[in-house]
Length: 344
Image (cartoon, rainbow, N blue to C red; front, side, top):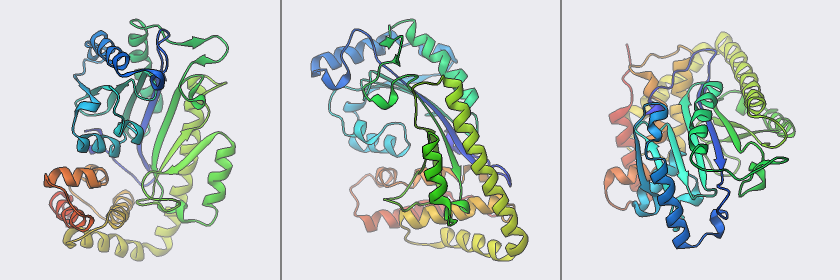
């Protein structure tokens, strides 16, 4: 899977990049207005026309109706950010094409007729856009898009009108996110048209210090400009995080090393872990690996734990309904089994 290849370094804190585009077909009303029969016809038609889409990159795709797979499978797709909460609970016919590594997915008749996304570890927005553009051309050769010469691509939500593009970068920011001026920094970036949001957590609380940076605007700029703007902000945040880490390591190296090894010890021996605690300890380990404070075998797979320990995946592993406390016990079991081993 794409998330098994996250490599962090002292000055490189990029977890992943994602490019998502939404499109609608010019001869159908938006999905929210389609009845059951029309939705099914649309999904079947698109799946049929795009059955060979893997030829674009010589990639194998699996086709399915989302509403026909088990609830737990849809929830896992949501936790992996392949679909959103609305789609996880949608009852109307909704189709999906997804690659073997889950890095490329196409949703049919979701919020829009077509939502295509491609994701990768690291900072690769330009590369992802080049690839997404080829898939977009392939789809457009088979379907006419709803497009206005003045406003661009027509979408179900006004916030997506224009390019229909959302560019996302996930950064690991354990230090600057806890600084006193972080909230003001996020607010300032919002006024510039870039959003910074925590990936995991409830309300203002963030678990794991993973932050998603994305463009807020889709209208009035071309795709390259939106991607460049998002990347520029992400690189600035990455640089600030690096500067803080260098300062901390220079003055408090032993204290930070102690925190990292304690986190490894807890993850190695704990018998019960909440999602919040597990993500925060994984975050401490990721920081330690990145800063050279600890060495682990297969450290590039460490981030994948943050995805695989989500509640729905743990419940799937158990193959039976679980209470919250039981999920916490199985989560600790899973982490002890799959935590990368320490290199002495």
